[in-house]
Length: 116
Length: 112
Image (spheres, rainbow over the protein chains, first blue to last red):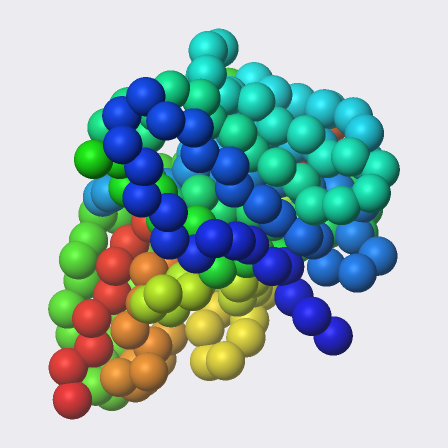
């Protein structure tokens, strides 16, 4: 029973390049969350998606960041024209239903982005 | 808006010591409360939860009681082990809000 799979685990980009982070939720899970963890800070909510829909993107920066969760394939978090401040660990989590009902999210191991 | 405040770390204890990690919350509704744990190099995993006032969540020797009067959900363990070394996150979810809000995390070091 595979858990939440994120790749790449580590990604190095130079300023101005694009970063694409992928997340395959657990089997049967149609709810996906993305969180960002900055050094010495907690987890910050970025976006909540269901298949083909963005439900809540109130935590996403207005520019350069986008997310999708297509009908087929993994969820993608895309960061265009990366800057050093984007260096962080990005965690994906999934749930079989609205997490507010159960509170349980299943997290991946994270993708660590380093911007040079 | 909803928020979670937990004690800053790092917290360093000797093996078999008593552990308390404080957590208080602010919420507009009647939230459910959670503790998640993150071991080195891994993602978070749910440790325990409580969905209403006076509920006690427990798992792996850890406990936390939902105190509505003090808006708190402190994590306790009677005798910690080296393997408990991790980062602990307090979190809440509010019905009607699809986000789960996390605190900043408290890093715990247990010395043998």
